[in-house]
Image (cartoon, rainbow, N blue to C red; front, side, top):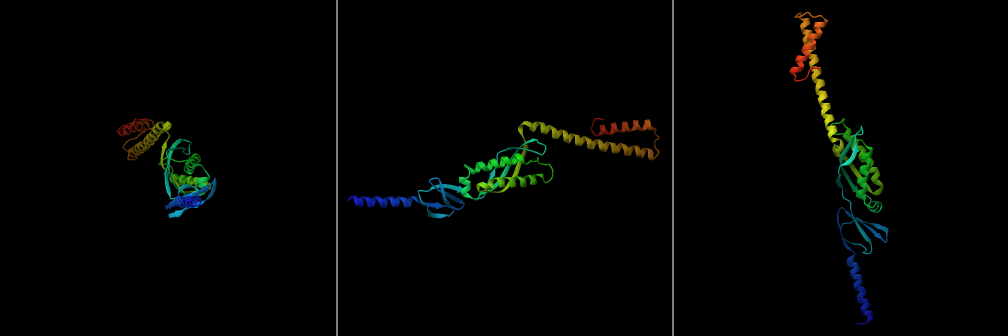
Length: 237
């Protein structure tokens, strides 16, 4: 074979390799962001067998609807008490070029947006004011969606799924809640005792069973209060 024939065979082989190297398989829910020498050259969203210039740099992007459950993130309630919140984010990549080229890692950027939003929005513990959880979720969704939109991310929902006190104050807040419950219980018992004493004294005097002056009335009220409290297992005040 002469030099011209060898050159022809080499050229044909190179073209064959070039053609085969450009074959690719597109998948539903996946896209490729194409670049050439640092410049954006387009996005491929087609599925099935296709051909892409092998000289182009391909970066695969997942454009399906995705759910992300965060790790415990620092937050605070309306009173400034430190909390740890786990949120569930529903999102997807809408603009592949911005998501890949606008930031170094769009998933890391989304996590930072969630942390920034939780630093601005108070989150209440379960059992707090009615509707506070829904309001916090709506506000978080709005803030995160606004921060993520410039980099091509579409956020549908950001909802707190677990709220707990920060470890450094969890024990103190637990004791505080128990004390508050105990105080409400004692107040309820005391109110019941006072009503019972008042009803008993009123019946005794109205029916004429006893005649009491002020001193005797006070003494009777005191004795009845002690008796009722002791009967309910409480210490007399």
